[in-house]
Amino acid sequence: MSPITITALVLFAVTYILMMAFQKIRPYVAIASAFIFIILGLTASFNPSSPFFALADGTQFSFGIIQAITEIDWNVIMMIAGTMGTVYLFIESKMPQLMSDILISKMPNIKWTIVALSLFAGIVSAFVDNVATVLMIAPVALAFCKKINISPVPAIVCIAVSSNLQGAATLVGDTTSILLAKQANLDFSDFFVDRGKPGMFWVVEAGAVVSALIILFMFRKEKDKIKFNTRTPVEDKFPTFLLIGTVVALIAVSFIPYKDSAAEGQFYKPDITNGIICIAFFLVGIIRELFIKKNKEIVKNAFNEIDYYTITLLAGLFVVIGGISSAGVIDVIGQAIKNLGGGSPFVVYTIIVWMSVILSAFIDNIPYTATMLSIVPVIAQGIGIEPTLLYYGLLCGATLGGNLTPIGASANIAGIGILRKEGHTVKATTFMKYGVPFTLAAVTTGYILLWIFWKP
Image (cartoon, rainbow, N blue to C red; front, side, top):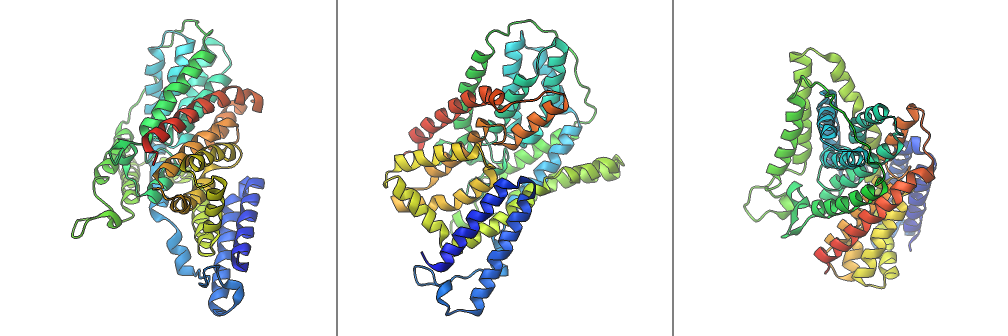
């Protein structure tokens, strides 16, 4: 490896170590690392003949300010911000609570109620951010558990892990799905049917069915009857229409190709189309609240609820990934994984899935996925296959793997935080009692189906 490649690799490693060690300042770590790569790029531009900045292929390392800015995927940033804003309005309308109340009222006993709440959380999470889903449905489960005097810990944990699972089902379900869609040039409909084959939606749903059977088995003794007829009143249905409108619009534009995949002379959509849609529907809701309902407080809260932490982290990571790519690090990592798998597509696929499961159990899956999405095409090219199988395997392992531990996914952390406020301490062993069998069942199902559907 050349000196600049080694330097970039060390900087990248240090960045990840610091982000794991100091989770509260991860965005600042990512931004600082991004600035260092820019400084290295500027230094290289003033020393074009320096051997330090020469890559292994003989080219010179180049990474300027303009390139750093263009590395940031603004479509992803806008989608995250717009969707989170609309979801907040949806939550405030209390429609999710009403939907949960209706669901609970139809269940015959405790066992089926917990299963139904978990499945319902999964369905909602396919279209709403995982953490937001937990924040919506967990209070309903808490009220239910208090009413029948049982511990809410198992129910909340099941809701959290189910929410995390279903985030990979659709384009808007989770940040990792949005990242994958951009990298693999996928649209909303591709998550259902991709080039004539079943997409991630069906793989995730199969995993959800199997994991639901696991939950059903774990709660097989909870057969007490329940009576729960209280329903949350909903006076404003407009946010529900906004969320539905966002999904419908994303589906509609999914049939219009991007420039890269459009035929000559064919109309194509701008790269930031999905982001514009998500922002537009959110702004419609904000304008209505501000000028028609005169509710300035909810407007303020809606902007505050946007996850600027994740947005800043991603912006920094996009630049960092661009920097390590320019320095040849992506090629080095890709070659290492290829060699580890011996060039076998099945072995490489297996390594990516289960490595993602293990790593995502301890580190945030957003930076991990963002990094690996850049490495996957290099690996695929090295073993002579299309990258789709490896893309989907990465999403399967990275998204579902977070359910192994209480710190592996933001949804799990949110669920445990809610329980802590209620005076319930959740030990790692308690969480893993539900999380491990759930994860192994879902990941194994997805792992097998993806290979059957997408094997080269």
